[in-house]
Image (cartoon, rainbow, N blue to C red):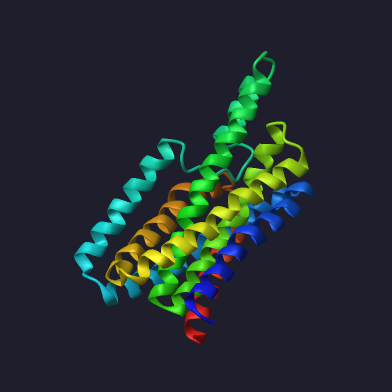
Length: 260
């Protein structure tokens, strides 16, 4: 298979498949599984960054420039999230749900809740598009690296999509409309993958630095977005479960890298 075919397959799986699986979790009302999915996603994200993405980028690019790219990328993602362009919501206690609870009992509850759902869709579409570009960059650099990056992105997409479904359902969307709009949003990942492939075919020298951006994205999502939610369960049993699932995610990335 060509790189383009792998990109199309991976972005389709990362977008559409994650939405379908997330809808099963959300519609079956099993939010208790979300923290476990988040723990595993943290492991795959950090494993992909430090075992595969960064080593490959440093091997083919200037170390100082790549380090600066990662640092700048983390700052850029922080700014984007502050501007509500990049929204992740994995728990019913996140600020979106908190906003909805504060608005209960007010006349404009329906309007505000619907707007929260709209913002989730806008942010998720942008997020999916960028993920598609990052997957394309990884496959252009190396097929094995593409697999690892796609796996890490798919792993963190699943708990995110579950959170998005819960927000949309709480915002007044029917199950059918929530599924439809999430599928539509996920198509942006395929568009990002195709656009990234076309652009990088003629600018392969930029690939190591795009990998730096990919590393920044995964580090930011894992450390700034996912891990703080895990700290809300400080009891020993939950901590041990989280550590084991994080280690499992890292181990899976290590096994894939070793087997390839």
